[in-house]
Amino acid sequence: MSRMRLCWIVLLVIFGGFVWGNGAFAQNASDARDNTDAETKGEPQKDPAGDPAVNAWYERLVGVYMKAKWTEFKDQYKEWPKMRLKLSSRQRRDVIYMRSTAEEFHPSWWKYTRSPKNCSFKAQIWGRWFTANYMPSQTLLGEQRAVGIRRGRLQIVVSWQPTYVDNPKPFTNNNSFHVFIPDAKDYDFTIGTMAEVIVWHELGHNYVNLNLPLQQIIRLYNDYTYLFHHLQEFYADLTALYHAGPPGRLFTMRLRMMNLVDYEESSIHTRGCAHAVGALLTAKFLSEPDKWPSVHFPGKVPPEEVERYTILYLYRHIEPSWTLAEDRQLREFINVWVRNQGEKALRRKGRVSLPNGQTMMLLAGQDREYQRQRDRWIQRKLEEIIAAKRADDPKVFEKDWKDIENRARFVQVQRRRNRGEERTSRRRSEEPKKKEDTEKPQDDDLDDILGDPEEK
Image (cartoon, rainbow, N blue to C red):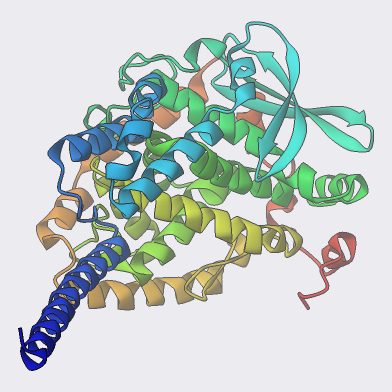
């Protein structure tokens, strides 16, 4: 073979490899773009591996994770060593994430939460350890109360019914504890889902205790009792939204619909849990609607109380098919917000900075002007979303607006709870001891008490 011919063959081989390589690179780049776009929109990613058996295993693992079926999750996870190298890189990251967070949702100390006797155990919220003093309850869904001071820390007792913890029975609205969740059967909630939210919520009351020195807590409690309880409930619900498993996040949002329908400005659960947390999530959803495919937006701007009824609509129509990507996005958003803004809101007298640059004050009397500003912002965003055809049919909102029967059911549940002979101390704590407490201005001396160098 002549030297010239050999050179041509070598050149052709090199050129062919270059073309093939560029084609493969282009395909990989295209797949990467598709996956990045899907991740941005909160949608399931493409699987480059294309192995049906691997994909089926992955989908089963995601399915039991999203339903918080932890025994089945552990059984499915046993296949991980065989599947690891066959999964796509995105799937591997998802499995690692699910494995690590499953342990966070039900940590090693979780067994104490269903103890039939009084006990104290080490628990952890937001990366910080504390001693949880637990008393089982026969009648209460959940309760917390301060009982004394030990080693420079306020001692808080938490209580719930241990029978409900990890209970696999389906949750139904035909229950004795007067908790109403619209369309509960569509979400496959269990009694254990409800109990998990209650446990994390009650433990979350310790957020204030963990982030302030004792003297500041005592001063805050004595001089600003009304604000103190609002703050406790705000952080308690954020704790439940972050630390509970995927069904618990959906349960928490839908549970707060009761407070949003039967709205009571002076209620710590209405303002601290339903409205303040709802305002945080609504600002996030509206700021980036394409990242939340399971979230539905109203096809009409509410004619009054725009923020309140927008939160209610979002909570009411969030899909049971909520994805792993969305669940992870929401949990990571809450985590980042609490670590960056949580303590600031505590030190700034309940001033909550929303991710869209707006502000909310936990106490309704201080929130009037901020409320008007937030309503205007939400109206603008909804108009944009409606114009982009990302919102629901307007008739869906109109039906909701006229759904008197559903509103009556909410109010009925609330009244039954109030009329009951056994009124929990937590319910009583919602009522200000004095009328003037609800109107008492939060003067500047709280800044001196809590020592925030930033807020002026």
